Length: 169
Image (cartoon, rainbow, N blue to C red; front, side, top):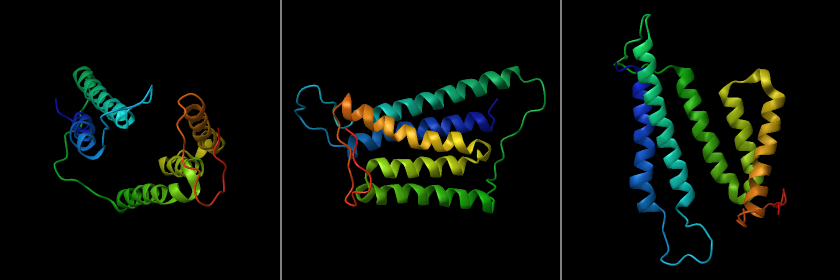
């Protein structure tokens, strides 16, 4: 049975499939020669888009399995999209957060921008009971990510023109 969870999984799969098969080949240049063990520039976008497609397919599979096992009342798919003011405000905030991240990245650097992005993301999800955990994760995940890529993959991250936070090496 097609319910809103199956449609959500299909939309997730289609979005990441569009990114993987259409947007990455067109917009991410791939040089003819890549020296040494350096990954190609389209490797990480492809990995992320393939993981997104996998999550979408997993979402479809779990929605179908749950709908087959459901004995109670199922929710029909609403054919009219109901947008509330809260939903539109949250969508606008998410767009503003990502635009702010893109604006701050060359100025503040990766580390500061990623910390602020993580803090904004955790605050937009609404998990206010776990403020300490969200703050620790928002501080530690970007630091660990930058340390891993700088020391294992030897990938430099932008330090930013404001020189607020040092680039970790």
